[in-house]
Image (cartoon, rainbow, N blue to C red; front, side, top):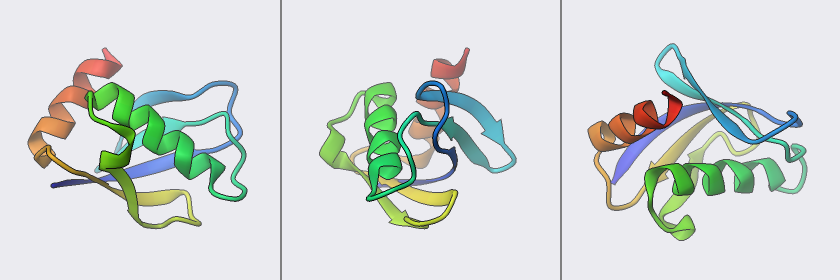
Length: 89
């Protein structure tokens, strides 16, 4: 299982991976930060970009904050970073 840091901007115009912000990945989501909607949007976006099932991506820490730790089952951290970097370009 790989673990990455993500910084989330909820309530954006669209749901998109922006790129790196320090040691974390920056994500904008259209969903509002209420009742877990933004977290669900983050997990859905990352699952799609990484080519894994939605249930293989979960918020491990920071569920109510902008900075989150996300776990991805079945992929190592290096592979997650490689796939996300390719998705930004």
